[in-house]
Length: 509
Ligand SMILES: Nc1ncnc2c1ncn2[C@@H]1O[C@H](COP(=O)(O)OP(=O)(O)O)[C@@H](O)[C@H]1O
Ligand SMILES: [Mg+2]
Image (tube, rainbow, N blue to C red; front, side, top):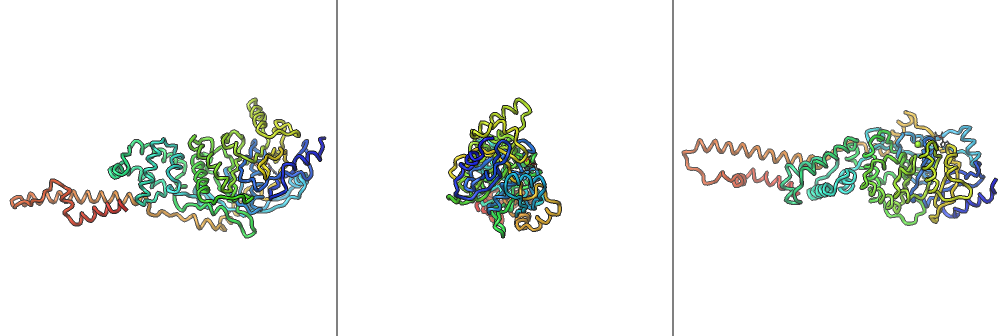
């Protein structure tokens, strides 16, 4: 057996003694844990993002749970994307058993059962705090990226946002956006072309089709009021624990576009509203995205660019992003290269392709005299992983095969009743779940069009009446006022003048 003391020194050489950290478990040498050789993640480096990878059933989601609950305990709030619906158990204490007892004996500290303050959120009409954003908040750039629009189409979206801004017409939901799109090439054609240049109806038609596609993935539930304030993700409970916010996304697996729309809007909103963090030594918020391939697989290259740049920028706001996925290649290279923490669970070598992938994965880890990385990758047990973190100075810590601790909270979901009582005690549900549909672009435009139509009808009626009167009084001297010019006639009637100005007034407001 290799020298245990030398190995212990190797593991510890990675850390400085300053700063707080999370203890993941014990380092392993030749299949055995080494007493007191703990594998740690300094809080200071948690805004450097990370990856948790490995085959199905190897312990990725439990690793996510471990990090999340330890952050909560340190007073750092967390946001979890719960794709499979297996994370609600974080709100209940775990239970010790012989296996866990054995695991913790090997690691060297006793198992502790604990529950964590949790909030359930939802993007659809499932139970939980409703997450919504208005189209206005989303903004023309992001909306165009999400809809995968051409430059010309994106230009039109920008004009439409400008028009709504100029006319104080809130764009709240997709209904608003569709209405104005249609208005711009229909009733409002003249008005638009005068102010912004002509808009082609084939372009707005193409945009409309993309909006409908997004709607079909349930995005109409996401766009609207009341929009979610990301500050509400930062709550700390009365014991000083950070809240673990769990977004249930079980119904979103087949709706990747909605998922990426939401992710991007959330990250953009966080970026826009969180203050710049100095060197506070700890993150403000840590996000975990389980089954992360879902946001990347169907993303357009424009969207990927947007995600990449946000991943880069959001660090300075003290926000850490952790991607959990089976295969590291699910995550684009430009994102991968920005990840500070890498936790690799076991990989399976069934095919030649698998073995190639394992070789590649192994090459992305620091070289260690204690491990043959590619061999370790296929022999890791469940709840074991290769860990490469960053130390407080931003230098990678020595590669460590790690026996991970067991989650303190339940490794299973909440029962129906437990979930009900969690939802009942939520302070955010009353704040966000009321449906509001205040006057916005849709209503304003509908009214405007109706008023214009009414005027047209009135005008026609008046003309007919006039014509009738003329035939009956044809013997009398005809007034000099010309009816050939409808404009003159219209303006001569005081009631019409008022209502025409009314429409104009509304347009100008
Ligand atoms: N750190 C751990 N401590 C104890 N048991 C674990 C641990 N990690 C994984 N397990 C066991 O392995 C099972 C599968 O883990 P899970 O995290 O759901 O896998 P994955 O997300 O990779 O599919 C868990 O239900 C649990 O029984
Ligand atoms: Mg999982």
